[in-house]
Each structure stands twice: as structure tokens, then as C-alpha cells.
Length: 232
Image 1 (cartoon, rainbow, N blue to C red):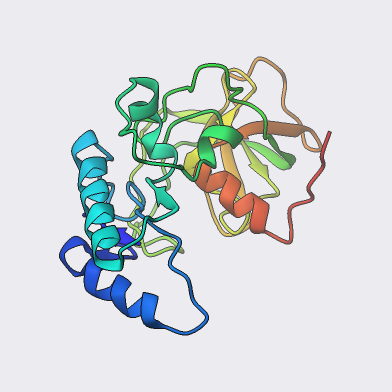
Image 2 (cartoon, one colour):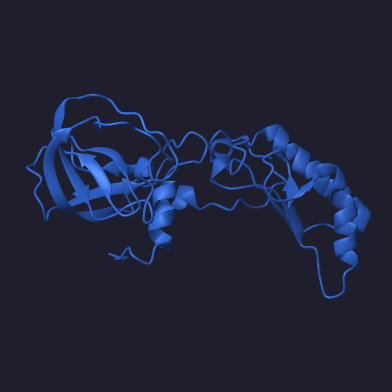
């Protein structure tokens, strides 16, 4: 892997030839190609210039090894804008697409990919409590359970629903309610709090609210042993 600036995994471009030469000399190992990963840790956006740099590295490695490489893996779903604009460098042989296939969005601005569905996955959770409460906590406020000092908008007294799902299962900031008028307020480890004052239906204890998950919510839900997975 070649690190082109996102600073996650990979060898810096100027060191790739030396590392590739060492790999090629290792017994029982064949260097099939090179790749890069972007817009993951550092949020660095894939560009045509970045892809051309990757191809320059490929040319240098091929010259050093005296043979062609089979694969140039140019990135992930963050590369989709380049593809859709017709700007992807021709020498890139593959992309590792996950989010664009599963969630229907590219991974830079999270805009829709033409022809893809945006609601393939849904997260449903039971309402375990509904009460009318003030929208701002009362008392001295410090850090919450996750080490963050929260801030709140004063909207007066509102109907609030607590759902039997929390941060151990989903990312509350990555949930889009399907019921009109529902607002996701936040979550503790195992409870999700929603404002249902303006919900189009009368939400009661025992009801189920459904959400469309974004990347981070889907990641947690898919790996949580406490979330039942149903394929339809």
C-alpha cells in the first residue's frame, strides 16, 4: 500500500521501490500490485493528481522489478466522484467499493450514486418509554458518559421517546428517521433518545421506530451481537 497523504496504512511514495524490491526477494511471495487508501483517517480526497502519482509509483516499481504489476488498486468509494466525472486515471485497474454499493452514496460528500438505492438497510428499535420533558437538562452540566460536555437547544417541553438501542449498537448521528417529525437527540450506551413531539403518528411504548443508517451506524449495527439481522 502506498500512503498518498491520508496517513493511515502504507509506505510513502519515495520508499515504495525499496520496499517492493525487498518483497520481491522474499521466498514464496509474489508482489501482485500496489494500492492506496484515502478519505478514511485523514479525510484526504482522491484526485486525478493523486491517481497519477500512484501510477508513477507503479511505473517505478515495474522498472525496478523488470516486470509488469497485475493490479493497481486506486482506493474506495471516495473515488466514485472521479469515476462519475470520467476523471479516473486509466491505469488504475480496480477500486474497493463498499459504501457506494451498500448505501448508494460516495464517501466524500455522501451524495447519491446514480442507479443505487439509499435505503437498502434499515435499523428498527422498540420504544420503551414516552414522556413529556424539558428539552434542556436542569442542574450543573459536566461531561456525559462519553467524556463530552453536551449542548442543548431550548425548545421547551417536548414528547421524548427512549428506544432500546444505543451507541454500542449504532451511531446516533448517522441515523435518519423514516417517520416524519422524529428527531434523533442522542444516545447513551444502550438507549436512544428521540424527540417525537411533531411525529406524524402518536408514538407509544411498544411501538417500533425505523431508521436508515449511514456508514458509521451500519458499521456498528452489523458488528453488534445485540442487533438481530433480518434479510428480506
